[in-house]
Image (cartoon, one colour):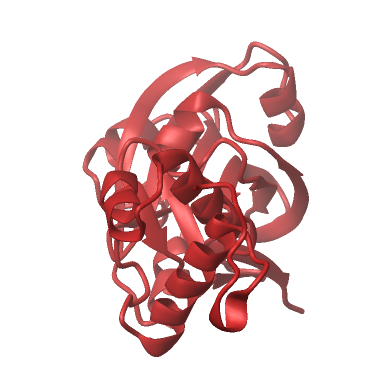
Length: 245
């Protein structure tokens, strides 16, 4: 009976998957399913509505496209939370951004090393391709939910002690201050969009069909010298980028 249309009450003529979508939407709107709450599994919903899992999956896919739910690979489907405004300003700091939304910031350093700059990183930092850089990949979270995955790059010649400073785990601003840079600001931000690769989707708990915002950020010191080039990706179901004066 899964693909036949309904012929009773106010939903006469609707496909079964659409009726399931309407029922779940109503539960979200009533607050029965709160923001960030996990939906029942496909098997549980299939048993509840007396349909097969394919029909349930179609309803969930439509709700995901509408931004009502987000599908996390290997974890299930969750009611979408409010989208966080990532305000790009002269001094954009991750912790301040997250706390502005009354959420607790945290992060996980996935990779920290000294390496050689490829063409894109070298251009962003204004150094020679192959030049020595410190690179840190960090997963940013708000209340435990992934909201960013960023690759930060710094020139070794400018900050010879930065690797050790970053290894203390006290954050980028603290590490740069320990290396003699008390303040820095955003010079430019370039934003594009694309679909995530498998690793990004897994780390950000995002469906491969949901796009990422990609921001290339250049930070400079008070004298205008480039001190950091970062490529960050942000899941569009949870983050939108806003430019401030």
